[in-house]
Length: 364
Image 1 (cartoon, rainbow, N blue to C red):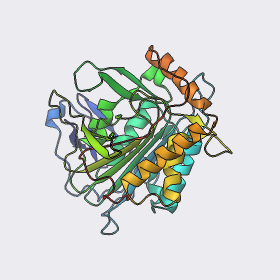
Image 2 (cartoon, helix red, strand yellow):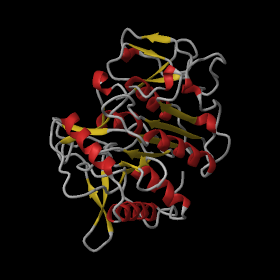
Image 3 (tube, helix red, strand yellow):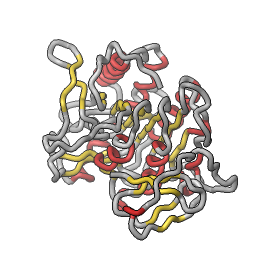
């Protein structure tokens, strides 16, 4: 269970990872030492009255302090795009995905630029490179101090993988993972950690959307319910709650995730959709669905995305990126990925609670 402690310098409430004896504040960079985390002081009731120092080098103070500016709350986003350049794992479209998503959030959904944290290899600030530590800090920042009415978004475009699950909380026996820039030395970020960081703490009245464009990403947030298409052509929800009884939902908030493919599939990095440059197939189709007027409900978005990818694959488009990422998955997991005779990718929808996908309006 996450604990809240006050920064010893600026008094900002910080989420303390389990077992930690110290934590660095993402706002003022001060290190708070704790002899025993169980004796940590409770968070201050006036947590929004401590603005960060003007000279702070960290990007994690992007959301302006203070109460929500209006009745609709604040908007915050973390966007991660990783190309793994100069490595054997290089992807071509992920930086484009990140830039396109930022443009969509700012111009269509009115996210303030100052509340969008970008982690890409193009950033010169060392806090903004998509390393494992920076991604962890960014996810903590995303949910820290959230209040009812807030709308949060996490977008990731990069490699994903799977690894054996040994605690019995996965239906298919595998944990899904995201691959930071330094995953080969620092390891991957497992779905259990993602769930514990941005799903479980989410309080009532706060909404989080995740848009994950990666291989094996179907249930990468470990949300309890997965939307499937039935034989009759209707969307139905599968119950993925662990048999162990471990709770994978929120603390009252709402989390909905679009992902690039099912847990046993790969996601394409391709120019077949845009015709002019490489993008992640899922990110491109999500943005296209919004721009073409299919963004009214979650069901209309999911259907438009699946149709666009299916049509591109059947029209002979160059989905070579699918084969590349299949090979990467084999290298990362040590297993075999069935590449079949062609491209196979179907965007997925997961949620903390089931709902009518064609009745529920989509909004960020």
